Image (tube, rainbow, N blue to C red; front, side):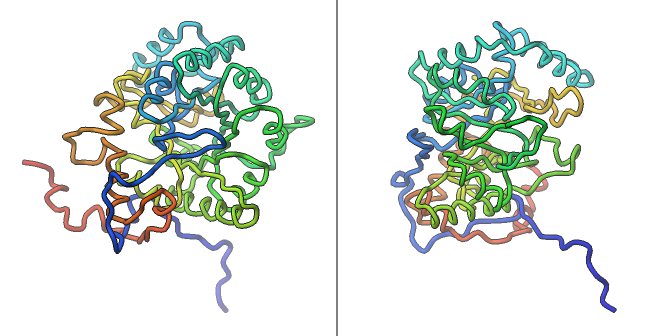
Length: 380
């Protein structure tokens, strides 16, 4: 008798397990185009800074805009709990390692000051910069009108896992289609990792989708909850949903790969797997301009009952421009992400990001060791 299976396990892939196949033609990297469109907003550099208090502040948002990207400020974070957020940030980054989680929980126990929601947006808009903000689904109906009225260009509804069918005790929870009709700004949602959920979310009328659960450097959802999907597979599944939705409706909903991106190679693989843009957190926390001063921690880290994130020391490596555009003397791919993308697009014969979606991606489990003997030994 054949032994029955309780479940069939599906193989999924992360960045280190795949590689890109060069194209049959090559292109001058300067001829490639990479802009990202979210609703009526054009982002020249297709990189979003994550909604982390260690990264996105009004000042950092302005710096990010100058580099052509956009930062997403967390409306439920330190920026809206404290008139002077620098003191709270200092308390977190100077906490001893064994006390960091408790200190983060204490700092975030301060109540949100509603007047600061609009104030932080106005600080960014006063500098002429694009402004994106985020909140959890539970607080969106409260914060979205004020943020958009103050000038927010994109509103992001973000939680660890987002679906279009959330069951709660609320008489009427957040309905994305209603939200989209009520505010005059593109609405992005996340995070999502499956084809069917991505498709259902797109059907609500959203302008963009964040993809990723579990792979981030500060995320501990895999350890605490056991939940997560390797980022290559998650991106490809959600990209398939985007293509199916476009086939049905003629509407193109960009997807943003969020989490687990450490190197220029990961950036390039994200786009080849179907991403239209990427979201970076800890990599940008390493910049001189980041408010975390060389540290990073997640949005779920302050959870008073079950923290799902940890403070990590990422260090400070240089300016935001150096990380995104170089020049760099590092040969490990951790700087000049956009230079890597343009060069890879040229080698793969991709003029645009949509061309990059057509690049062949192959399973390459030995890529980290194949021919890299002396790199693995380190320099002498």
